[in-house]
Amino acid sequence: MGMKRAVLAAGLGVAVGYLAKQQIDRYQTVTPEKALHNAKETFKKQGPISGSWIYMKPEDIEKNGLLYNAYRGGVTRSIDGENKQYEFHVDVETGAVIDAYETTA
Image (cartoon, rainbow, N blue to C red):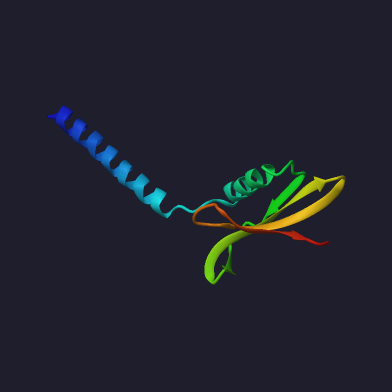
């Protein structure tokens, strides 16, 4: 009877673990580090970047009449020997770059 209980306990543990992972995947948002990585990869398609930053606390922004919960960050690129700074917003839910624009210092 001990073997049946062990198999039952193992099966129950696997089932609970699987369900817990499904719930975590459904409600997990993108971390600020992952959001910054996604934004940097997007900017790198246009050329190298020399610096980057991101705020760890998401903020609500409105873009094209839609409300997003997003991280705000920035990158610095050297273009023709001149440093140019860009700011961006990354959606907390999907990790997609919502907008990006050049800033003037």
